[in-house]
Length: 242
Image (tube, helix red, strand yellow):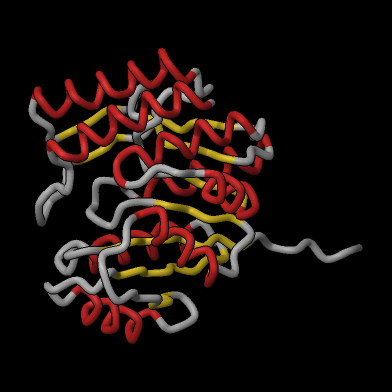
């Protein structure tokens, strides 16, 4: 019988000032990916964090091994989209998993992403806070209102065939991620939304897994008024051009 080639999963973790969260998120990734018997690597893309995140990452690499933890730091804070491009260039997996390093995305959902993708051969599997038993914990009313409002407007204007556009916990076939990123023009908070809009244009299939999003445990949120204004501008741009 022909040998079945095992899929490999590359988990991209862009970091900036995550020294307290990184050991916990790496431990959880190792726990759930090892328990599932998956072939995987974690690529940490640190943007010159002043809090010592890279030094913590080096210690974690010593613990778990260089074949599991890859360090691909950059010289400055260059943005999320370029961090993914940088990570993809070094990824050896057939599938790319993107998630936040601040513990807002629990690695326990990754096996659900993988199994759903295997079952239906989806190009993309996206975590959603707005279906089934998905939800958000730790946000005040204002933050929830902003998120809900942004998602509602995005659904209304862009018709993306996915329920959660502004989330950033997803699994992609490597080629699908490369294609989506190459076509994106947005930066910052709106980047994840455009990724699914571009996926719709390419007619990629999208599956969804309900997730619980938990506000960061350590550190400060990077979402502010500037990001909200930029989101509104980019939403209108995408509406006009897609």
